[in-house]
Image (cartoon, rainbow, N blue to C red):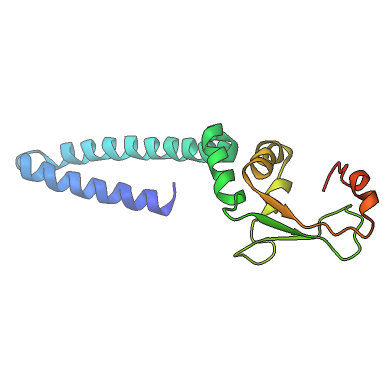
Length: 157
């Protein structure tokens, strides 16, 4: 039993003893003590059982226990920007990777896309929200306009 549980048990015992003495002033002390001991014992056992139940529940509780609708709403709050996401490519890039991006009113990297790396399940659930609910703005400069149609056959960014 923890110190907090012991303290609660003692306070409850004292309160019940006071109330019983007030309500039943002629009750024998031995009878009162026997009743209080029984109450304290049952209370202690119940608290220990509940502590174990609480510990088991905490061990099982996690983000994925939330309903999908609530998880999706959390993903939206974290990953969706109201202004368009401006994608900045490094100079002379061959459009292979995005190194930096930002929104109009936020510095680079303010949307924590690292959440997509937490687990496969988070990535599977959150990536469609990130890609589907955001607007992306990309400026592409071409040195040779003839190559532009071929270069626009992008597979990934």
